[in-house]
Length: 212
Image (tube, rainbow, N blue to C red; front, side, top):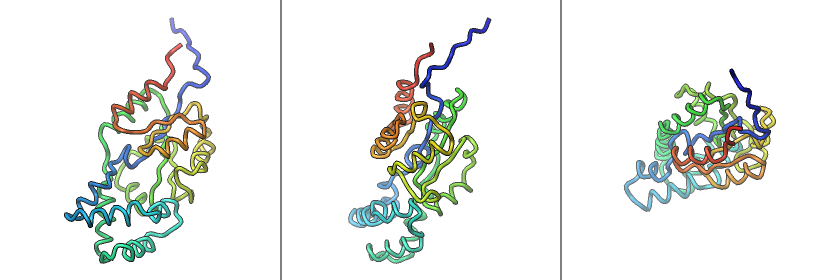
């Protein structure tokens, strides 16, 4: 005889994943190390390209890539062909993290609805969308450049919740940056700072209510 167990009011239904650093590898130190042997040049590329506010402007869709590359070239003094090479190496570094995808698949099998919320440049997103085929595992995807806003701006979380009719208390958001997690928590969403797939799995198990 089957016994119906009612779902708790705020039982988790939705898991939202970031991309870079969570489902796809994103390690700036490894990227600049692949570009330059010199510690000084590595630090220059890290500071003046990846850590500069222009990178965030690209994610927000507030700047086109050609303009950003020109600004990178002006700041660093690197030849433009080097700038193109840095960007290509960065994009090529975005490869799936197997254990994270195993976690995502396990959650999907358990019946949780999966979503994606990512800060991503237009050109990078177009490339990733062509390169990989796991996008249909998500019930919804929100990418910053399309929305003209980026994490940790509350508007991007509010968009995700509104667009897909998600209840914050029934939603977990996973990101590798604490400021993005904190912003989600302020919107009423459960936040997890991603350190590894195993650590993330343990943190999810602490949030998901026990069966009645």
